[in-house]
Length: 279
Length: 153
Image (cartoon, rainbow over the protein chains, first blue to last red):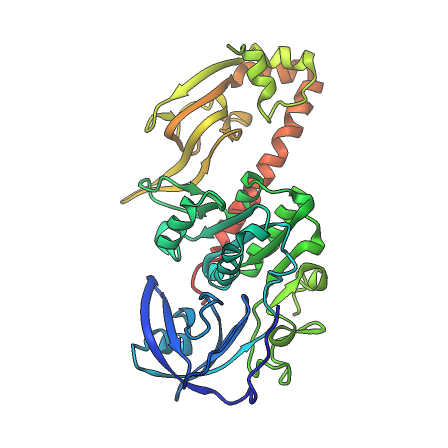
């Protein structure tokens, strides 16, 4: 699913931070208000280039509800100079926004099938809009499953929302963490261990996977073992995106530009590239 | 009420096992239950049992000096707990504790090893069923060691 790009994709639009909420220790969700009255419609899985004036610009996935394009939500992990500056912006601070860019999750094409979303760590953020989209049109999909792996219980993103989703009878939510203390009563183990536990028809399933690349490779292996067709597996890739319109080549991944052809790419398209160490 | 033979045959670990083999392994099996908080085994103890979970949830933990125990894996319905009985010195390398009411089949490891030793076809069948589980856990451990969700350096 793709929506049209803004008229000058290289010019950041001045935008105001509306709210800033801490998700986990190093991760914040910023709600931005686009300048003027313009809405910025986006497709689940797309990203914006966020520019902290005087510091730099980085790509950040949209993590909010695509049905509310007048408020752009981004979940940022503060790990580098720009993301740290971005995560520190408080209400009313100015930020430059270019986007939305890229190809999103094929949520329309998945209608009628079972949908399995596998997220690892911060990978839940780019998948959340897809889940909002599917849940708002729930009757059009078969079984919907969210499998989420985090580092530890303290690193679980969108915890209250996960609890709400878990209470739904039309959504299967399974969460695991890599390690925990003895007070954690949920599952411990890697996210891919959740695949055999989930209820879906592998012959009629579309899978969306987002997380660290190593985790995604293991997730693909688990999905294939469960019988999911590789043509029905989609991954959200991460590379060094700069221009976001396929001109500069920084995010080149074999014959694809992650910013323009991705970030969501079908596994079939990149299967030969995933295990190449050189790229 | 189901007999132990039926319970063993229905567990995924032994599903499809030749009937004669099943009769052999069933002589090593008994039903057990653990209340929440009860240990199946503790680190350093004699690894004399293979547990096949029927229903429940078991946490595997390692004690770390000066810190609370680290829970590194949980296992649930239809999964297998305990590998250390397979190789000498047959000692548990971690603790296993039920975190909810857990019902399991307990296979006497000495008995099972003996049956496998005296009938290598059975032994090979058991090893073939164990290896994918061991490899899956090894792969998962690698991923945990990689700490893929940790902050990039």
